Image: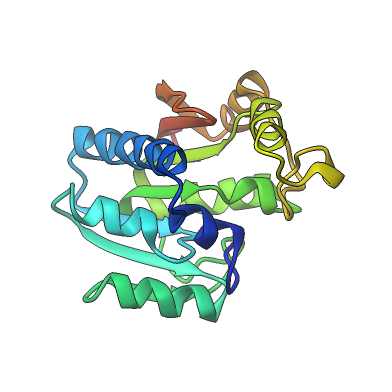
Length: 200
């Protein structure tokens, strides 16, 4: 999740025209997938500085809620998303009832977590129907970083990324929790829209 002057903030505020195109394609993919299911209540778990919330709010007629662990990220999220309800908290223990939202969004979070399965279990608890989840597509992500001479000491690994999934490995990770409805691969991410499996 985001921190002050985070990699996430730097990425979305980049003045580089190519970076802007790549980021906008990613955000457009999320907005199109969300709009296609016409949710009424959306929750962005690990919303960071609120860039995804902002794009969804401009594309989908829904009540949107965001949550992040970092105060500094939430401060910026509130600044660029007036009127949106934001909470501070952990994706491991969401302060919401079962089935409270019909779409839960979890983008660019799982790669940072020690326990990604625990987060997936929790987001599917609070969703009544759909989850929209993304991770960097590896090894493409690291190769792209190295091509632009970023994070060379870590062989292109973005600081804070402790999990790395290929498209196939990511699908295997989420299949126990979601029935996969759509898969999109805006460079360099894997994005999945999934429907909640029948809850026991």
